[in-house]
Image (cartoon, rainbow, N blue to C red; front, side):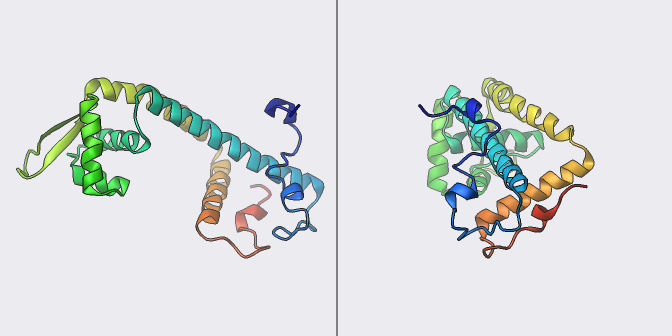
Length: 197
């Protein structure tokens, strides 16, 4: 019977451990790493994966509760934040933010309006445009479901020391960069060499 996540805690995860996914060291040269260094690096990646899975689960639950697609929720959040900044949100702004076509934006807004989440109204200064606002009940629901989650995440980040914040930022920036352009084999980002500050 497979081990549960709790039963595996304290053990390296074979699904992200280079010793099991790259036993011949074709991708990662581990000759200069101690077993402790290996296990600590694997533990960092396991923690990142745990966060990613938890964040995805929370996002899925919020969207499911409100019967929204991914772009629907992104649009709602964009409208709320832009309105909080005193901006009048137009369909074109939503299309630019989401990187989707005008036709797709129209369909998205039709869905949200039919569901009672948003309202279209004439733009105050441009008669050719419309302004999109989130209805109070939908705003309150997004605030409760998404806003509270973000507040908890912010509190965790705020509790870090200044030096820990710099290390986390550098680590996550370097991690994000690996998705854009892979480094040559054997080259480690500079922050991977940081042992503490």
